[in-house]
Image 1 (cartoon, rainbow, N blue to C red):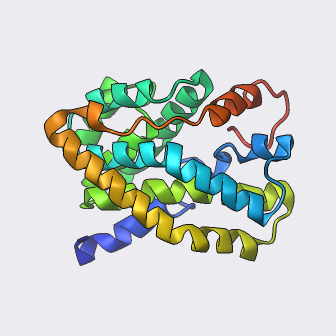
Image 2 (spheres, rainbow, N blue to C red):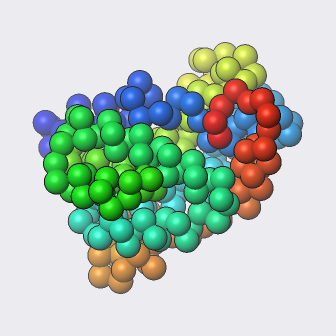
Amino acid sequence: MTPPAARSALLLLADGRFPAGGHAHSGGAEAAVADGRVHDAATLAEFCRGRLHTTGLVAAALAAAATTGLDPLALDEAADARTPAPALRAVSRRLGRQLLRAARAAWPGPALDRVAADRPRGAHHPVVLGLTARAAGLQPLDAAHAAVYESGSAPATAAVRLLGLDPFHAAAVLAHLAPEMDEVAAAARAAAARAMTEGPAALPAVSAPLLDIAAEHHATWPVRLFAS
């Protein structure tokens, strides 16, 4: 259970206004809207659900594992292996670098400093998220919750701008997905617990090929509203 003093830290970490650069990314929603796969609240919900159970689960497990004290460089390599699309690797490291800057200002500590020195171009975002959660006094399940929430909130927020979607409907999409988010976060925490004895290979490696392909196409667009 999260200590009462750390609950506000979890809220801050999950807040879209935390200066970690997430507002500039759509989580693949911009490409999905352009392809016609997301065009209303119902298709947005399906997109978010698919992302939650694939890349969301992987990110949540990596974040939870980083919170346990496992070697962050080994986890960073595991994240690299689970991110086959070069465009998404670059995005993840960029977001990790931005989050690390914010984290070192909010919760300074030697663990974050070491990662900044070892990965000057940025560690993968889920790994930095877990290290940030640990620095803020949070538990592995908290880090998993933050990751799964981001997996849905990024495309849902972007859809408001991309489609002119009613913000109330976007919020309802996330509210209806909340029980599944809890389940995925719990599964990610269990996987992180296995990784403590079996190593990073025990972490999920679920793929989302369409997201990978769309990310590569999106990266070539000369004009786009979101960075990814």
